[in-house]
Length: 423
Image 1: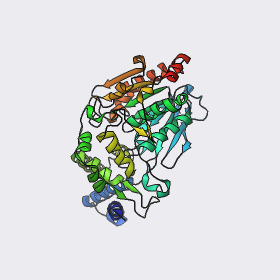
Image 2: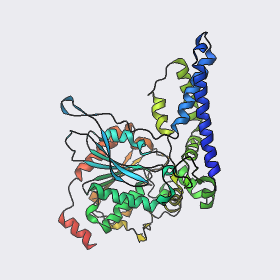
Image 3: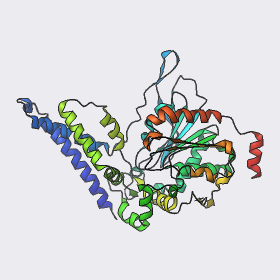
Image 4: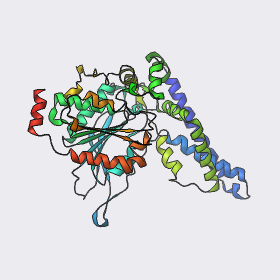
């Protein structure tokens, strides 16, 4: 029963705040309340509406809501989501457009498992769909996965990526965003040894911690300053009886959200105050900037305890990837085995989560890869979010990534394949 009560207490607090918001909104909506002008009732209703939606979002997985994609001659193609590979801890999904000619560019987006759902990449998917066939790793909320499904750590994550790459075929171009960058690199290297024909054509790594010590941030400093015992004692809880994963040890999404908000508490406080004012004045809308952002930001998911702890211990503290000392299923992965997969690094100059240099370290590990297969881009003035979903992504990075994909669309020649076999 360790920490099951604290898990349920957090959910109780969330549920209570949602109820208070709903009650205030309902009370202020009674017809009798409109018999006379009363600004206090308007403010109460606005507070209730914003509060209810805020706390309701926290346990709901956002919809993808992908709009139709424009085709030639003004024809729109609706986007349909199908599951290609289904696994206990995550699926590989495919965004299909019935009636549209398949694109030659086939992209697999590797979504982070760092507190938010894969829908965090919605804008990235929308930007790629007109020009590519897109697959995404859709990770599941650990609270909904029965204990009988077993564990899930960074080695299991790596093996999942290998299975996903095999499922979509070797003509795929993998784009990994943030947290999974080192694991996507490891999965590719492991495939280079075990199943070279299943390797992707190219690998684009965007803002991930291949070597956290290359350039310190608050995230890396935190990882270095706490012990694993402290993390396990303060961050890990057991899922309560409300969910299918009852008894599973997790790093709760609500606890992660509290950490996210505390890093910019004043900004978030002002944002919610301003939204209440807009609602009271009748200036807010269902899909205004505030709601579009916070519908996604507040939707958090639990991570398995073993995934969170192994990430901190092995990626940040032990630097196993950076030191080419990463072991998966008892096998030491050798990054020098990657000899045919083109690799591009994308970093943001103002990224305060995965600072410039952390992701670039990947190229130094790829000693078997020719220089003409390596590329790197540092986006001026871009923060972490901007390098995969913001203006910098849309205007600058996305065109560069598509050009890189096109330049490496052909299968490796027989000569290159022979080099792989010799090594």
